[in-house]
Amino acid sequence: MIRLQNIRKVFNAGKPNEFVAIQGVNLTIDAHGVTALKGPSGSGKTTLLSILGCLARPTSGRIMLQDREITSLPERFLTEIRRVTFGFMFQQFNLIKGLTALENVMIPAYPNGEKHASLKKRAMDLLDLLNLADKASSKVEWLSGGEGQRTAIARALINDPAIIIADEPTAHLDTRLSGEFMEIIGQFKKEGKTILIASHDPVVCESDAVDRIVDMRDGKVAPGDVP
Amino acid sequence: MGALNKQRNILDLTLSSLVRRKGKNLALVAVYSFVIFLLASVMFFTHSIKKESSLILQDAPEMTVQRLAAGRQDLIPTHYIDSIRKIRGVQSVAPRLWGYYYDALSGVNFTLMANADLKDRPGEIIIGNGVSWRSGTGKQSTRKNDIIPFKTDDGSVLTLKVKGILPFASELVTADLILLSETDFRKIFSVSGDHVTDLVLQVRNARELPTIAAKIKQMYPDTRQILREEILRTYEAVFDWRGGLIIVVLSGAFFAFIILVWDKATGLSGEEKREIGILKAIGWETSDILLMKFWEGAVLSLSAFFLGTFLAYLHIFLGSSILFEPVLKGWSVLYPHFRLTPSINAYQIATLFFLTVIPYTVATIVPSWRSATIDPDSVMRM
Image (cartoon, rainbow over all chains, first blue to last red):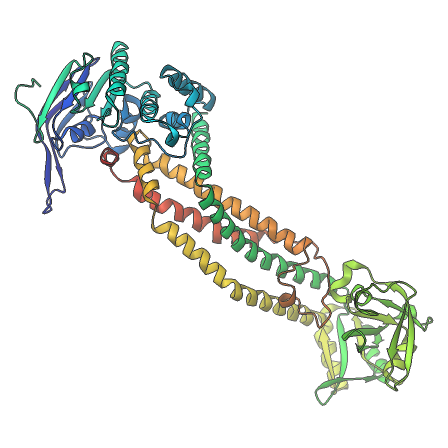
């Protein structure tokens, strides 16, 4: 589904503080499964996740999404791919404060031009699915960690993406909530979604839901991982 | 339809965003509205008062002839009338008797004018609205059939009875006016029967006015000719000058507004930048973010514009321009409490719009555009 060929990512290229975050990564992510990028802090998993999710462009190398070369696409097309194909969950949840849980869930779909009433209904259905219907009109800063996490999940699902990308999703959750999160991920997998998670949390990496672990170290995929 | 829904959805989010920063945005709208209120008030006032003056002066004589003595206006002998009437093109010449009377009781000056309707009714007067409020006790309104005492030039007292009060609508020029009979006027000011204050002329063809004026000047070198057009021009200049004076005083407020816009233009808060980053990451295009910021600026500035303009309208046309009254009118000692006829110049409104709403909206978009062009992956490192 996603194929990375010789990906390299350099920050501050040509400057004294030049930093190579990803070096020569070749990787193929299959559809309908859960892949976890595992590695210590600074190993390049978040950067690789950004590249996989079209949030960042590699300095060199090629990205193929369903046999379509997307590396050189203009920003406008990448944005559309990001909106339609991917759903994102961030480490800090990155919900917009001051808005309700419902509004936060609806935001990614606003540019699609869907009718407000039907969009609202879909968002409510998602919140209901994640047992958050009673929190729909609560401002996100009033939600607990677990509720914030589930709001972020609902937001990631609003455009019904084929691929879900989660960066350290359990970093701010306790063991019980982390376990619940992985159960939800298991359900998505059953529904046929492709899930990419960057995490070094054992609850994630040792979960039954995870099909494949990609070990990363120093910006490279650790030897032994088959591309 | 999709495009319309998109606009609606983004506008919906914009309004939610504005509401969650209630305090900041309300303060912004308050300052913004106040600046627009002040500017619009000056514009409405100067425009309406100029219009009002020109409407009133439409009925004024086309030419007034006055006699000068030592550079000051003096009484004009009545025998001038016949010779001026004989000039070709002159339709009529009418003598006028008017002057200023200081009323020691109320401490203000009145304009006294002999009126043809009262010619055969000595002892009676018709007064302006301002006089009715100020004369007598200085507080209570003078009503019909009340008596007003006048001290004549020979030291005696002449009492005149109020037979009518001039309509409110014409108060701008009649506030301090008292109309009386020619006999009473001559008694009060000791003006002999062969002199009048000035002469007013009607001519057959307005184009001949300068020629007729030149002929009168040649015939009577001790006179001056005042044309209606000249008065109109003077009024325009005076009110423009006063309007300008107010603008100079208000420039402080205007500069404060510029600083506000500049502050907005030079940066977004960290929270706003973070939100733009999130929106980009979850699939908003740069143009969607700019659209949202455009709506944000437009909603704020249009609200302030309409509120400020509406308040200015109330202030000028219903509130008797209470803030500017002393500076803009400056009507002798007796300020008329009149209401201007609502008159708005679309060109002025458009100017105000382009000088306030457009710069603010642009100023809001610029920093957002700078933020919206950052890489969406920055949100991963927040």
